[in-house]
Length: 170
Figure 1 (cartoon, rainbow, N blue to C red):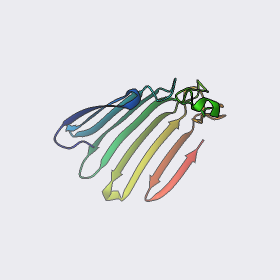
Figure 2: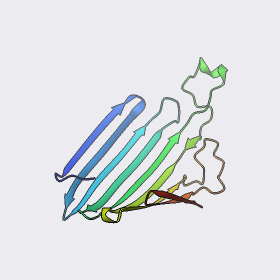
Figure 3: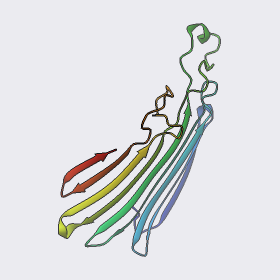
Figure 4: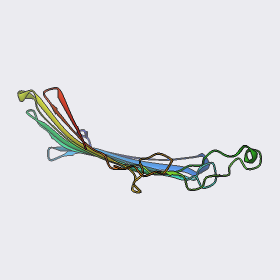
C-alpha cells in the first residue's frame, strides 16, 4: 500500500507486430488513509492476419492502518480480448505463413476481484472477505472452443478466522 511519500510513475513500451502498452502507478497517504493504484493496458496487431490483442487491468487498494487495527479494500479488474489464429493446413505454410485459417477465434476473459481485509492484533484475529467473479461477457468459459459454459459466472467467498479457512462456492 502507499507509503508516506506520494508517488506517481508512468511508462510506455512498444514492440514487434504493433505492440504498444502503457502503465500508471500511484501511491500515498492522506488523512490517515493509504492507497495504491495500478492501471495497465496494451494493444497488439498480431503476427498473423486478424490476430489483434487488447488487454486492460486495474488494481486499487485503499486502507487505514493504526496501531490497534488495519483495514483495507482491494479491487482487481481485468478485461482482455485476444483474437487467435488456429493451425494452418500444411499446404498453406509455404505460401501464406501469416494467414488465418480460422478467423473469429477469440479469448475474452474478464475478472473482478474484491477483497476486504481487517485485522485487530490485540484480539489475535484476522478476517478477510473476498469475492471473485470471472467469465467473458459472451458467456464463454475462456476456452477457444467458444462453447457457452452452463454457469459462466463463478462466485467465491473466503473467510479466514483465527487461521482457519472456510470456502464457499456457488
